[in-house]
Image (cartoon, rainbow, N blue to C red; front, side, top):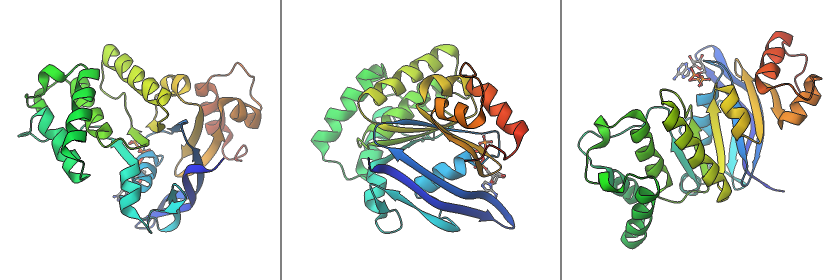
Length: 250
Ligand SMILES: Nc1ncnc2c1ncn2[C@@H]1O[C@H](COP(=O)(O)OP(=O)(O)OP(=O)(O)O)[C@@H](O)[C@H]1O
């Protein structure tokens, strides 16, 4: 099967520090991939590369088999992003946020109104469409950010630390939203250090440490690589890899 996102031999250097080293990754259409790692592991930097917001020092990223550097506009149409901290404008209403994103993607007015209405109803914020969201709770702001990310109907969704700062209800709502999007066939990449949530939601994982891949694959495959018991959790695997250094690197 052809991959929808491919990261080929990606290296990134800031000043004298390599923050991503030798990253190879293929993501198949419709799968949920978890990028796992501690603070500073390089998760956000990798996400920003896939989004085309940062240029690699070496290597390339392909979206639908086309290098981003060759066709940034098509890549951007295929990608949507939900940042850790929803970026909202203090003077725009919820509806105006959607409109702003729709305009950036040159959506037809009819399509925008149709999708915008459906999204706000689906996420239970239709009655708030004329309100300014910057004072909403974090969970509510996250929902606005999700609607903004989905308005142009991209097929690849990148989510950075989705659960930080959310209460239990908002976490459950967001998990349901992600599971529904997966059911609809979206390809989803989640960067997180919340291991139990990642274990429940993701089909494959890439574990990063200090910019390097410690392991990648399904939980079952990683357990085989690490020779850990089949009932081990993602957390067990993570710490076994951490303590074992690079011995289990693919
Ligand atoms: N613009 C930059 N200039 C210099 N160093 C940077 C820059 N952006 C990130 N870094 C460094 O790159 C490394 C990886 O950072 P990154 O934010 O990707 O990690 P992360 O895994 O997403 O961490 P967190 O979970 O804390 O968000 C860190 O050491 C960070 O300090």
